[in-house]
Image 1: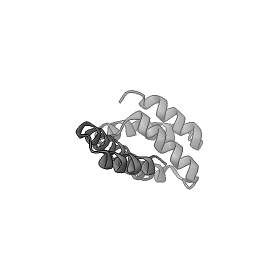
Image 2: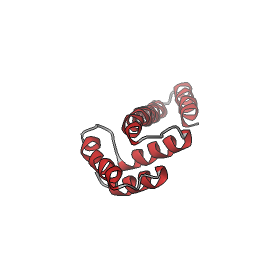
Image 3: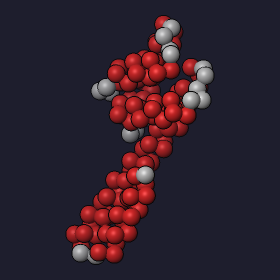
Length: 112
């Protein structure tokens, strides 16, 4: 995955994971993440930011499950935005202003 090393370094820095064992564990996750549909380094960066904002991770064993949970939310969010943007485009193409406005409003609510 392009950008994995940058993400791993940032994740370790943010959460104070400096021991060799911790660094090796995080590095080993690349194989797992590569096998997960929709996982990208950009989304992993967003997951790390969200987890840091929550401030609830105390042990390395908590990180991987928490990242997977955040990624579910991020992927769902991204897909919802993409689907609504497509609905909006189709509505505009068909000239149905009401549908376009409804899709735009739903998209605006999700982006908040």
